[in-house]
Image 1 (tube, rainbow over the protein chains, first blue to last red):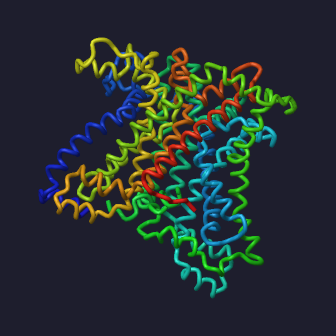
Image 2 (tube, one colour):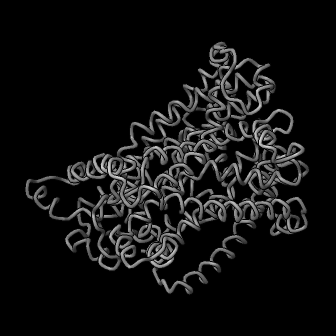
Image 3 (tube, one colour):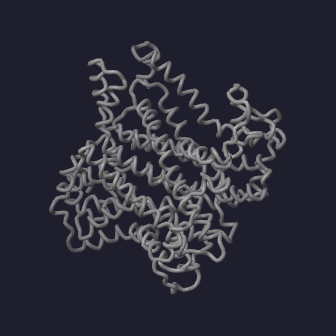
Length: 284
Length: 329
């Protein structure tokens, strides 16, 4: 903050360069966020105005009925609840599972360690376009097809990359930290509890990535809830809604706004950790 | 390899030990004995069960299914050997989807990676203003569900009332509205929308990679009178190269999985111009009657193997070219 202020007050050698770049980036940014702005403002337009507006953003007459219509009639309230459930449950499961696995891989040697490590690494790069069929069959065999549990399970089965993130983080923690705890008689679980808070940046990263990807997930909920529309998440629900009410674009826009607000919220809440985790030494 | 790349960067401000010493870092005493065995496997279990169930087994099962004529509900008895593969080798729409997917992934990667690297370099420079705002802007499209983004762009790209055509016409750039989702441009439009959507993720990967480049090096290069281009070529790229290769593969492999955008924007059309492999699999397995699971699985495997061979050959070349023998773990 102070450096930025200093930069403002004292036109240094980077002043002109900054002005040029910031101007250029601002134009690009406007184009970049235009689809957002468009969706948000469209949610306040009438049907007629929406089709006639072209590239114009601001509505001439502000209409507020799109939100209640999307929320109640199109059942977005139900989709919303499902999406929250799926995203929160899958994020918690994946976070706990990958943190524990990464911790053990980083600190202990045991038979099979390298095999696990190499397998995770290898599967990250397997270019199979879709493994949805066997997942579908597994869930079916477990009797969980068209249930919320089934969707959550299927959404929690990845995270190999997160394990690797945790592993490399935990392996940078100096062993001395644990030594004193061990002298105090800390057992395995207590040592883990000691290490976990140190991994906040990774936790933030995993939460954001996993929450976003499950919030936005399309394949799994689409295929796993083919015969139970009431279990759809927002992404699938929106898609179906557009199929059924092809002309109700303002309702669609309202639904879009409803569904992106929570993710933005999560991003802002965890952004500190996230940016720190990924930016590390590069100071803002 | 991934570990070295993405992870070193994730360790906040802690200088990671060099690759070679990492393994030794686990002291001899940490070799698991006695009661700790239970703990270790208890800690591994949740992840491994899920991972085996939903990542490893599906990969294996896809291969198994591909040798059967199977509709998904009857018992798996009708072993047909390579018949599915033989049929698919003659299936024109498969090869079309194969080609489309490769074009999509290659184009997507070729556009996305240089641009996101460029932006990431700008947004990690110490002197740059408003970094946080721009970072959020480029990251933002990731929060829109893919299918929704597809529908929004379907509207924006509409030749009759879409905003994009309206804008370019107002600037007098075109005479007639452009049919972005027509047969000629649909695949390119899909690619661009997908770049827009995923851009932020790769920007962040690059930022993580760029962490390994000390700002002092740039300053030293500036003092020596290096231009920005020279700094990029002689300072930045050599340092981030190992991570760059990983990012490149991640990008390509993930782009091959494109699905939601296609469903939402084009449904594979017009004609079959945006028919991609995952969509081919989906329509064979869930939309054709009777369901053709075995056939769809063979498509997945054939595609996977072909790409794997192509990518690993490329990988060998890249590794040789860069003289980087890094073997991962």
